[in-house]
Image (cartoon, rainbow, N blue to C red; front, side, top):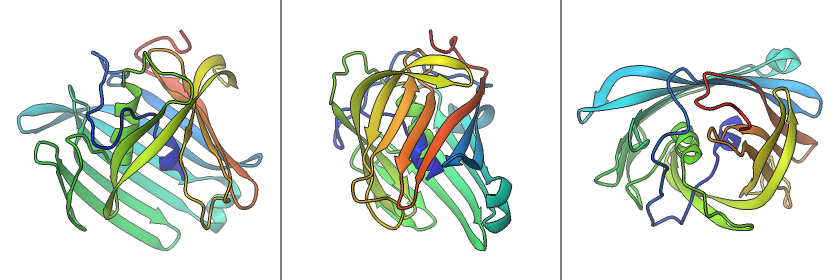
Length: 252
């Protein structure tokens, strides 16, 4: 759930290339922290960082993206979560080369790795080899950072977008609809935001008519500041708790 709501915005459709701005919306040293609330109770916390990397793939330099998520308070007593994700992305194209995750949730454990070959439209993972529809396929972490740098200067109300991502053992497309602008009250002040509604599938977590809403800053950073969705019992909200190392002043 936490990783899902961090995905921001895609554009144009499954079989087309996505256009990014001339410069990334983030830089090395950026660190964002979030709280995930179930009702009024803080259930989990996460940090998302952009780190320097010495690794090169195909001779090209990379950013290292790091996500750590953990339960807190009472939730940590009854259902302990310690999840860690790494993604290495091209500094220019912002597409991923390598992704790994270490998921520890109660007694459940999973360690997955995936190597992305964008030019040949393949993902080679420990679960198998997968063909991709375009030369832009992402893991959940890289999708979030890539989406922040998309050129949405011509976005219109009710436009819908898609973004391809690899998760587990399949390639999927996330569809998102732009639903307008809204000012959101945050710990960092009142911030003008773009509001989106990513598609979700009803099931054991979400209700049939559940809607997921995501608010991102209407500035050069495009940082998600809030996400909210109704579940079978109650609602879950993700809120930005702190932001350091941003490329631009937030909200401007």
